[in-house]
Length: 342
Image (cartoon, rainbow, N blue to C red; front, side, top):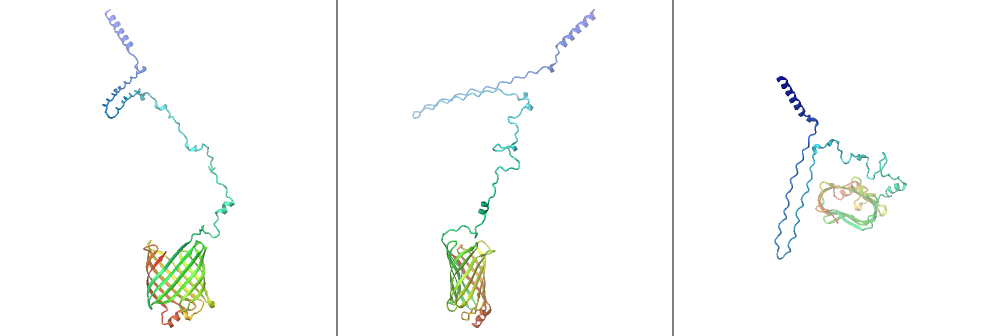
């Protein structure tokens, strides 16, 4: 009997313990309530300033408003993987400013067709000249104004030109000469009218007057002035005088810029005659040739002193006439001078 009671009591105790045991895995966990944020302290209004006798009292400042307490969001309970951005992804490559859909191979602004009027407007003018004006300009240039020491004495030489006119019409003055031991060996003056015939060339025509050597004489002159390829400055003039006399002069010079102001200037001049003229000591054909090399320094663009060497030689009958007078057919001299223009 005692054993039966003991078994009944143990069975009742195990059943009560089983009834109190629960499966907590199927029960939702209660979310803890967030703590309330601390309320900010109330702003204390500033004390009123004491009134000043000479000024009006300042107005009362309003107390600062209490910031609104917002309920914080618990991001741990939110599933961000199921959220989308407010603006979906857009394909900007297919968009245009005007909203039109582009067509492959089609231009936004079509090119107008080429007309005969367009072709005619693109052609250069007849003489390839830029537009000219009627403004009058002028220039005076002494390309050579020098002293020298030659075998037959000391002397002075000059070569210069001047012009006045517009871009298309000019009047030219040109002069060249030489004095040795206070005696004029040669001197001439040319007055010509010039007009352009090409981009870099002018044709000139006029008269030439020789003062020396011998008696004075006059020539009709026509020639070209301009810049040849590679920037050679060229003057070529033909002359026709009395009794069918003819002559020609060709001069070419070049400028080599060693620096921006130091310039080397080679120059070559050749004179030709159609007939012998014993009174002036000039023979037919190539009578004389002069080659010079001058180095100048441009203190100012309009003023440049120089030093150089010049070689001159006579040919043919002209050399024979000089030997008959006791002179050499060639001469080398050192020159010192100045080049000016204005």
